[in-house]
Length: 331
Ligand code: ACO
Image 1 (tube, rainbow, N blue to C red):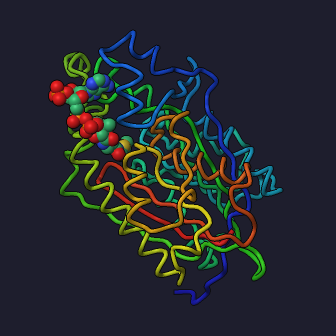
Image 2: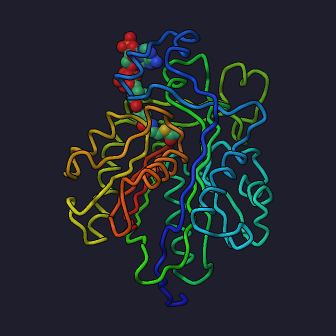
């Protein structure tokens, strides 16, 4: 233990979504569904789909450039890059290595983490600790996904839910009068791996022609079960960071939850007793972009002035693993 505990702030955020919009109406021409079913069950109206030749790393780098610009930093100053993704460009090397190259961030250590929708806040907790300990002065954390490459487009129970995109944040050592990541929390329940997974494509089930035909390399989910756990775990995680940061629900200017389903978000908002209208939602435009979702939402809320310097915000996420995480931040 170094014994150091530097204050760490979020110095800049950025996000990127592909140009191509896929609406619920368009999806209803491919599978037996409707805008009415999708919107009432999830709150989603449309999602973005990466272009041919547009990879997770490209979206990640585009989001990162905006975060660096807002932080007033050059890529060469970045010391650590963590990309949270379950849809890497390649199994190895890490997508973070492609991002390092694309940004010209040649002085950064770069690696990926795999924690599904919770990945961005896992990356925030890890990098916050590494900066607080004095190991690094700054970090670029990114949630980026090209889920369109891992969705079974014939399965209406999953294909309507997901989209592509990326969000990024620059963390750095802060002065006392600047913002601060006040508290973080993360958890995992590996007994529930079966509820949400991509069964094929790893060493347990290498890709073969037959399992590709059986759609084993695409996302499979027991939605109802995931829903229940999501509400409970996100509520607990958010309450933990609010209490650790010594805040009351009314002190929170904005809650930014994982953007998977509006009914999950509403259920959590009700249970947290945060004043109405303080929960940020953008899933109608993007669907569930897994690790990117909370990062894109953070950037949109930041840039649209939903909160200001000195406000307290809480981010809370949930995903495959099962995994969950939360962070309380003084902006
Ligand atoms: N269009 C029309 N009908 C549909 C569709 C569709 N797209 N999908 C399912 N249905 C049908 C089902 O077949 C079922 O029909 P049946 O009653 O005849 O059997 C009916 O609609 C109800 O299906 P349910 O699965 O019970 O619907 P539910 O209300 O649970 O909503 C949903 C499904 C949206 C997936 C919900 O369970 C959910 O959001 N779960 C949580 C997802 C989540 O939060 N994931 C987080 C992490 S994601 C990650 O980590 C990558």
